[in-house]
Amino acid sequence: MSQLNPTLITFIFYILAMVGIGLYAYKATTDFSDYILGGRSLGSVVTALSAGASDMSGWLLMGLPGAIYLSGLSEAWIAIGLIMGAWLNWLLVAGRLRVHTEVQNNALTLPDYFTSRFGDRKRVLRIISALVILVFFSIYCASGMVAGARLFESIFGMSYTTALWISAIATISYVCIGGFLAISWTDTFQAGLMIFALILTPIMAYLALGDHSQQLATVIETARPQATNMLSGLSTVAILSSLAWGLGYFGQPHILVRFMAADSVKTIPAARRIGMSWMILCLGGAVGAGFIGIAYFQYHPELATVVSQNPETIFMELTKILFNPWIAGIILAAILAAVMSTLSCQLLVCSSTLTEDLYKSFLRKNASQKELVWVGRFMVLAIAVLAIGLASNPTSKVLGLVAYAWAGFGAAFGPLIILSLFWKRMTLNGAITGIIVGAVTVILWKNTMASTGLYEIIPGFILSFFSIVVLSLLEKAPPQEVIQRFEQADELYKKEMDELKNGIPAQPENSL
Image (cartoon, rainbow, N blue to C red; front, top):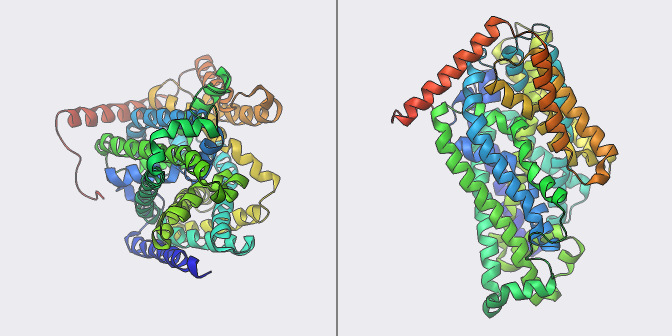
């Protein structure tokens, strides 16, 4: 156990640092807008890195390296699809959503934006979109709790229950205290830790091969004959399904909220360059760790017992073997960072949905800002307790739903977000139908058509998109005030971008 002490100390220091950031953010949180959207004050660096960190969960350091180690480069198509989708999301959605949400009565959440954008006086769209967020994110949060618990359980030999509570409390504490600012600032730090670990580990594994590194490809092909072939064993449907993961970005609330919180649309292009560079390097490092790990454990079979039993541990095992315990502790903390950064944002999105879209809209329309902040904190605890309950049995069937929660958000909200930002003719009933068709298609396809091998986001996204367009065209045009607000936001976005092209920078106030 003594050899684990440096790692334990590193983890404790890391968790205390995150809580400290939460306490600092607490002082900067004065109203509910600060708590759930940071007062729209994020600069390009924090916008970019917090969006990336909240996107990439433990899958980046465990799932992807493990898949590459087991099957080779044919598993990298998902990474390619994610890069394409993220870039298009930054390019097409980020700036426009930042402007439109502010023009639409300073909307603080996606249901809030939808309600104003389509003039939903009966608030049907608000309720439906809020329910979709709560259902899918409750499952997502449970998955994050399980990942954190498994990390503590694996490294420190704790019981699953103890590990679950420790990882949950660590995340809940800084979310509950500091809100959106705490999450954004900690995500920025966590993003730096993740890229450090993902770049350093495959490099050290390669150097550890010594003279054998010259025959890297040959050694890998000996261990995994098709590992270097990106098309090995894949059909056209399989490749399309992997690339289609990129479609999910257009509908992920925990990523879209980062765009809404940027201090200005003029910070978005710089944030896009920073965010995409970070993402490409991190995904490349994850692929590299799994790929080079094939050769490393081929030459060191005596060290491969744990990895052979569970390929997803390859990143952790390489770290333990290649680095001294103090450095290993820092690098292993990157896995905790990946889990905490995603889980924290999901908790806050659920909290803001419950507080802004349900509590304030239906129960306490005149609630004070202080009351809303404290209700938001209570809702974080409530969702966390629900997630812990779902995660208490890691083999529970509900956790199987996580496999298509990404698709559910992408299909339910993706077409709606895109069309709401580009097409003023879109109607309220079209929006409602699009959410329902997208979510229901994903669930039905997953449960009845999974044998086709086609990722459920593809039919869900397509049917949602066309149902919105067809129903909107069959109805009369939206009310004039709805169209005017759209045109106002569209003109403001174009003006801001023209100013940026002409060399007029974003205002520096509040930039982080």
